[in-house]
Image 1 (tube, rainbow, N blue to C red):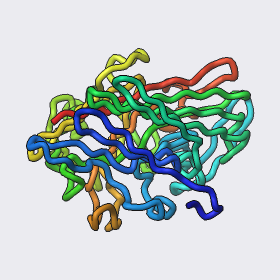
Image 2: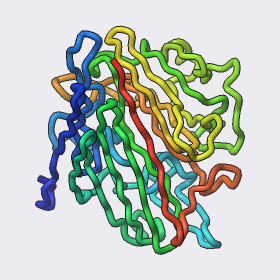
Image 3: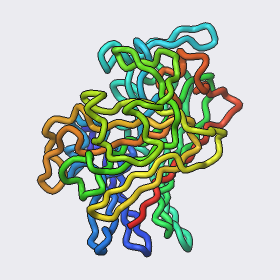
Length: 334
């Protein structure tokens, strides 16, 4: 039950291969992903809480749908069609993940759908004009679909009645070792030759840097911890997806040798934010586990941070005669 008396629900999607995904319509939050390991022992691979109360408090966007704009907008301002819009500055001087009450903190409408080889949770939300400072009445639909190929498919659609900006993602925190310990021994591959250069406030400068010879080079799989000391307190940077053309493609793979679990990330988006839980400090999580720095890794498929202020970046502008569409898939293997 939410503080205002409305009721949130928890939905469980299951397939025939032993994979289960729990999602609540509060924030569209993925609260659990349970998959077997190489010994067929099931385990949860995303950080979160045991009950709704944890998600109602302060937390780092565990498992949530993030919007209207994922990542940062410089000084919480952008100009669109000659008009300046001012947003909350909720991350130092910058705007982060949709503001004070983003899509991670709203109650979505929910319905379920089942076919022969899939089960889906269909979520919807009507974001009113100027909510959190963004223009346009925005209708957003997000489908979570689990299939028998052990894929969690996240499909996003949106329309607006006024020109606006939009950048949606899911903010799940992955740890393939049953969410225990850290992810420094997880091997990661990212199909990205370049990253967006950041200033001291983690805002893109507009330059795109080659990863060649740097700690950001994950083009060949390596342990996350191998070079993390070169970018203290850890990774928090956007990669430009190689060969981006709007089509679905595999852009990253995460692997944990100890459990034999692997996760492929496929997306139609031009970027992916690598974040290694740098600022988590002793958060009590599920099953009595206390999450700490580097407890998990996020691979947030997205358009680039601060895109409304960076003309050279792929556009995040949505017009009334257009439909926003993107798909991201987290494919699990064991």
